[in-house]
Image (cartoon, rainbow, N blue to C red; front, side, top):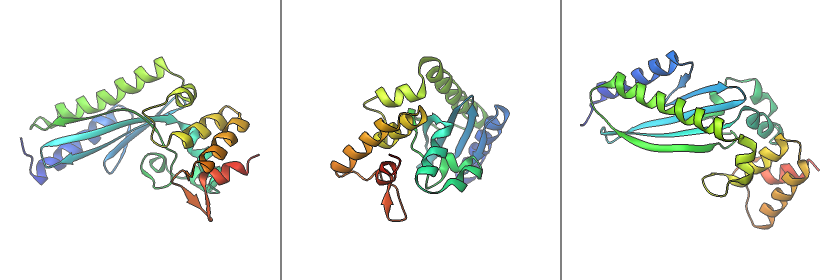
Length: 193
């Protein structure tokens, strides 16, 4: 079914209401929440007025604080948590699930389904994995894998391993896609040693 602009607004409003009722906050097309030490967020978007695509992520809440400290932006830690979910300069996250939902006129039902899916994915992930261990051991689904691994090692106070990953990344010509004050992420990590 194809939704017009007003119907799309109703769906997004329903997602925000459902998210709010479950303890999430919303910013634009993102919902986010802190559970224990985990930061969970879900980006969603209506495509071609026919389907809702979504991506559900998780990361340690501290990863952004570590990332911002490394990148010489510690004041970001004092800003709203929405920066951790949708900011331009944020630590990468682990993608837990992505998919799409064919749209129908049952907005509340679809909103509840999406937010329930975020709850279920995050709960299952946290029951099964320690985020730091998952990041260090996982070899596939991580966007920004080397950056995440550095953050995970720093999070568990293994600076030496983070520096090794940073040096190897630089040797391999990788920059980590983040730069501040003329240095990329890995160059900043090397300065920790």
